[in-house]
Image (cartoon, rainbow, N blue to C red; front, side, top):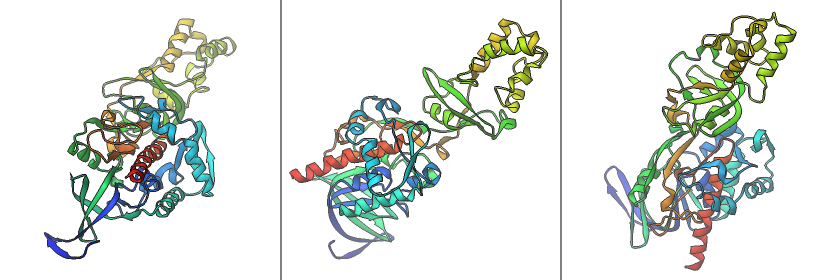
Length: 412
């Protein structure tokens, strides 16, 4: 670093420093990239600690990847874009990294892998790799200004009351999306993308609870059951959770990424059950039993009482005609609801949309407009399903950019 200090406004301006790679963002993607990009890498983040989303994920145990990762389980304006990065750094590659580090893990449902211990083990692993690669980490550091001139990215960074000008041959934007603003999420990646001529796919909350008019499900709050949630041709078989504000649970979070305002959801409350057959059999054996009571063998009592407000659940099984049984099975297998909206960025786990992939190279995550510029992780218009997919995208896209940068540095 060059010597000399001067005043500029309220901050002290220090001399500049040159690095090979400047990574904005010390989250999952940025830390992954830093561990592979080669020497001369500087990672900066405005947060006081690195990898905060990793730390809080999976109930503090980090759902770090999924055994079933495949491109079809990611949403993007270009469904083929994620294929290259996912194929070149797979879930098995990251799992090997975790196992070699001695981090114990276990599989939950649907291929989801979690740490046996704390999620901070994953953060520590990434920091060790970054340090071993010779990268430097600056926290509590804000970007004051960024420009590109004469083949260099020139950033003015404020840290501990001083402003340092950093010049880098490569710039990696890994600042994420807008989800969970209390963790420090901002739209910085989108501002930088547009500054350098990139288009955006309008960002919106993903993996987010759905809201309904106040009080719609108040009497059911806290109740959970397995369902099939569908929107259009997409469906998920997982748990639904009723809340005071609406619907949540894995099935709803998953389908929320496919739902658009004004659309209906279909909820199969009895997935895998031949309700019509079961009611016909019960009618012949216990015809005097009340219909509502009989339905409690298949659905929670509170939900049956709630459904009775809209459906005719009076009478006994013996009163039911085959036509009414078929209609009831259809109603419960295709309960149609229209959400009012979502809970928004506050509780959204991820961001849908982002930097348009049309402006990026899928192999290197490099900009097609500005040489040396890369966008990775959640900032890009690639969003995975719930269950470790978005962390895998962070690992894969971070590795793709890092390899390209290291290759370019060796060739220079």
